[in-house]
Length: 267
Image 1 (cartoon, rainbow, N blue to C red):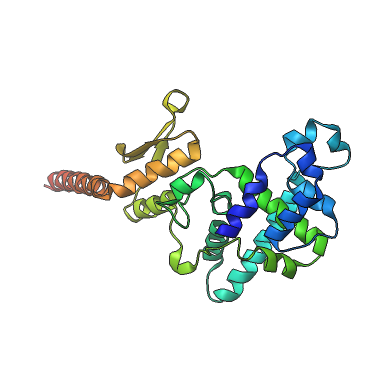
Image 2: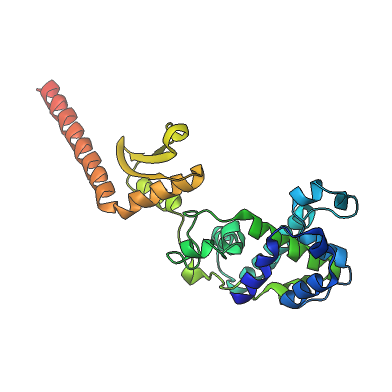
């Protein structure tokens, strides 16, 4: 974790002098434990697009965006390879969940003020908190830079394996609350309905089961608000099951009425 924090704290936008300083580059190389043959790749990995677009510096160096794309692909390959051999009998769906939780923005960006939210979710929140995306982007760009410079996926894994700790294993894999609620509802013959009609006014998401409000949440990002609403429903699962119970009771009553009408017709 200390290695992760040391590496990603380099993501602040530095001055030109800092950017071209040989000692600054050497400090990052020490943190990574890797010495670049092409120092321009290292510069590029830590150059934000806003800095790149605002200076003649852009004539010689690109921002980290291209390397981020490369790093994202390399990281996904490395992680799915690890999981493929670690869990030889695991289904593709579970492998996908594990890969996602170990490589998404939230997992890669777990530092600085984000650490406060991590207290409740030490491994992953499953889309309940908002991750600072720029930190994940820079880490992926650094992965891409090492891969291009070394032309070796094994070297990338050696450099970044510790940064990706703690690893989320199958035993520690949690469930996305939206998925969990859907599965519970399907077992009871219904589907949850999410309402974000008032989003522009109050940034609130609500979830209904059989037209009964079972959960709600307010957050500045819609997909996270929806996930939190689903978690609210799961946290109040007794209330949700009461809705299922009422549904079954109504269905039985309807069936009894139909049966009575049929008997009357037969008489």
